[in-house]
View 1 (cartoon, rainbow, N blue to C red):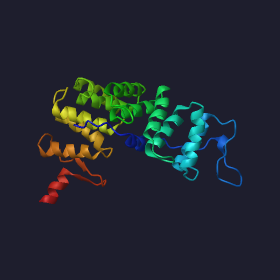
View 2 (view 1 turned 120 degrees about the horizontal axis):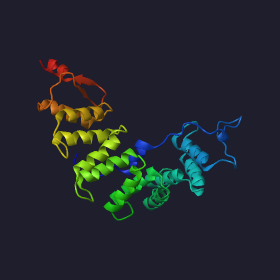
View 3 (view 1 turned 30 degrees about the vertical axis):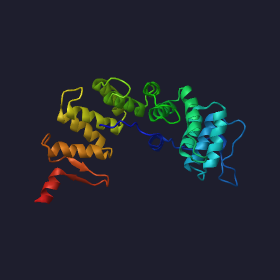
View 4 (view 1 turned 90 degrees about the horizontal axis):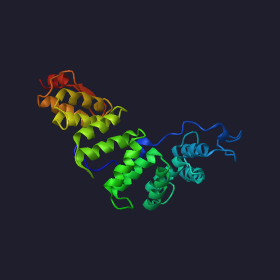
Length: 264
């Protein structure tokens, strides 16, 4: 992969926003209404969960204003997930006017408390130069803190930094180590990048079969680029398997044998 840009905050939000599964008992419905109510005994976590319900429209009508209000209540109790979500809302302009400076401040508060998702996003903000000067060292610092807590996206992006030599000396072996941590958690783009290392022999002996194996893991999750790479391996004669499935974004599958028969 020859991509220098790390995944943006909005992509991360789309991929990792947590859905509120249910309202806690203390935020139950009144007999004459389905609208949850709060009591003075609600914890910050319960208030945050209710905010998520309004944010996602789960069990209650979607209401960004109400969600923001509840996140603020939880954030006042120094609850890191709420602080982080306020930062996301300011970044995207959801329920509030878009304000990158406030987004950075709220994400930073959550990151300083050790919240891994916020640490990841703070690293992205330093990489992109969002309200701050671009800083590869700080990018790596915050990504590493998140990655050390097991965040697959952060692990993958550290791999990208080593792969591309962003803010450090290029090191394919370290890139492989970090990609593998993320790939083992099922992150398709990390699986794709491992396949790329094997296909080209970057930091590992060139091995088309292993490249295919990793590309297939990613393709099985719907990664179209991985499917394209498999097709390229076959068409270039690097692997030979008539039963390989060619995937498409339309979720249709044709084997190479099917394609050959159709062309006859």
